[in-house]
Image (cartoon, rainbow, N blue to C red):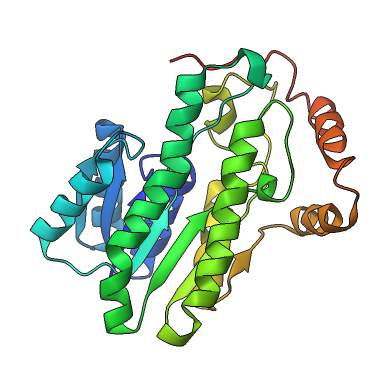
Length: 264
């Protein structure tokens, strides 16, 4: 069995690669950062003795799905699990953030997810086994001021995942949407949000929970009880008050302080 994982060079993606390798999956890893990607591949080969193929590619770039597709076909390896994990954030008031960067984020979170899912699903359906894990976010349920586009893309991912899961009920395939809250990775510092000390769930715990949920054929996975509670509350609170509550919560967690829009 083989798992194709995007954004596999660090954070949740790296942890997912390790978790699938631990379960005996061969790995097809995609990410922009070649040195880190090579390090993850070496770790999984040496620790678990699995086959690992790597492809340095920014899935948010034009025609990236086409290039990944050519690579997969050249390997002649069936894809049993697709993990759409690649992603990043842009922080700041929308009126002043970089539009090009936000369009790149839309392409990474949405266009790549759709393209890769379309690429692998026909053969998965033919085999009647396997499926897709989409790494969404707790913000899938919460409109998030100063991360407006990020939260909107994650809401799209969740809605798409739940609809696709229902479409594929007859096929034997599983589609699992994973919605973590704050995770202790480089995600926030990369978008210009700094905190005095590390916080959040470990990426290893998120990955372990995600893989277990997929193997249990669950369509939705929200790691952590508090995150589950917040997602539940968001369903019952008036929509008009949720963005303000998210803003207050982020201010209390000091996620607004020192924030700068990422321009690179």
